[in-house]
Amino acid sequence: MKFIEATIYVLLLALAVSFSLAPQVDKRVLIASDDHNAEYPTTKGLYKIKEIVERETGGALKVVVRHSAQLGSEKETIELTQMGIIDINRVSCSPMASFSPNMGVFSLPYIFRDSGHEWKVLDGAIGRELGRELERVGMVTLAYYDSGARSFYNKRRPINKPSDLEGLKIRVQKNPVMIDLVNGLGASATPMAFEEVYSAIQTGVIDGAENNPPSYVTTGHYEVAKYYSLDEHTRIPEIVLFSKKVWDRLPESEREIVARAARVSQDYQIELWKAKEEAGMKAVREAGNKVNVPDKQPFIDAVQPIYDKYAADLGGLIKRIQAVK
Ligand code: GTR
Image (cartoon, rainbow, N blue to C red):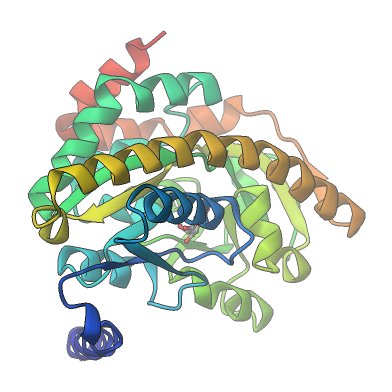
């Protein structure tokens, strides 16, 4: 039933979007999607792409940004991108693991030592390789964006050590690694679309979730889950994708413009991100939320079984990432 509902949803959305594009069937208008609001750094990155593409093509190619999950949850928008209905899509690399398993390596806890290590990997051979692999599933990688570190928040208690998570229902993104991570730490993982989390916490369906400070604040989750425990278990990058179906039909000159615009937007997004992270933490503290910074080592020890579980599939990549200095 769920599958049928999801299929009908995707078809209806496909129809709706195609009709809204009816006069531009030759794709002179590119639809760009993001699940955050217009002010969030990732969405602003898409607006930067729009600005450059429209300027450099002299308006021949237009970009319409649909933010705030107007086109559906991340999983749905990824499917619409494969179909060529969404042209440019900014999502987290986390749900991408269900489409291209190697992407799951970015969701492994503490895989990156810090932000510097993360960007060396993303900007280097591994980032390029994993990005290119997405072409097999119908998407061209244009850029990675910053998403900082994700930490737990909940409405019950501060998490100082892994055992404090026991018995808590924690929402996760739809990604097998995230489910294993949260269950492995003793909580009960509840996969759910981002847009449903606020009311699920409010009504007590779940106790909390996990995310970076800007997401914790812009979604309002910080109003309903007051304990924020900065264990920083993952650093999952954001990714900007282009539908391969559409890409293959784009003239080479326009592909170059789009690719260059995305590269410029990456630097811009990273700059915005730093300020947004600081502003996010400031807002959390000003709201009187309880923030704690647990010792990370017990968390690092507790997640080792996940590395054993994924060693067969991701072991080579894990070693290569760890070797990046
Ligand atoms: C955020 C990310 C969103 C979405 C969200 C989630 O950090 O920017 O696109 O993936 O996390 O938890 O679903």
